[in-house]
Length: 163
Ligand code: CA
Image 1 (tube, rainbow, N blue to C red):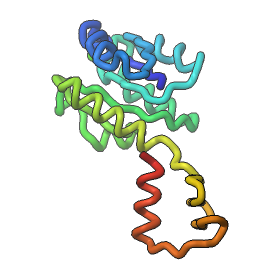
Image 2 (cartoon, protein in one colour; image 1 turned 120 degrees about the vertical axis):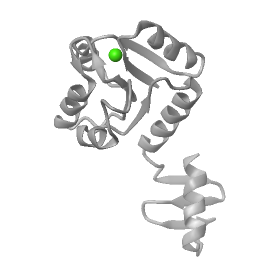
Image 3 (cartoon, rainbow, N blue to C red; image 1 turned 180 degrees about the vertical axis):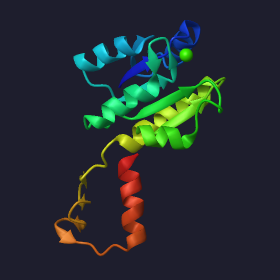
Image 4 (tube, helix red, strand yellow; image 1 turned 135 degrees about the horizontal axis):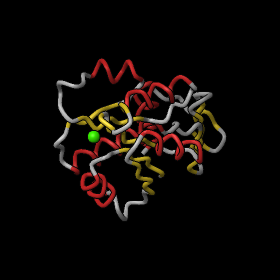
């Protein structure tokens, strides 16, 4: 998982990157919008942690740019206080979530995990011999024989397949 972290508070940035260490995340840290734009040109990210108040502008501007060019990378805003920001502003700019400073790193990790889970496409089909579950076609079979599943059973299966 590649995460782009755009935060000009160095101590906070390091704390965030450290708190994700050893969990399979690859952090790219930037402290300015210009650096973040460069990083985005060089490769795709699975998620962007984006501070609002940056030395060369607002994180909202970067998020708008991404969405304007059809980039749907999940964006989680890091905001200094409620006053500079509202959930409406975030949604308007195309953000997916936000967290207000000071925040607990554990809460941030939980938000990141949940955003990544939401943004991952659900599996189209699941094979667990002798069972086959095709969620696109809504076909469920055992040894090639179709099974009748209720809507609830289908939903449960899908949940299990996704996790
Ligand atoms: Ca800042």
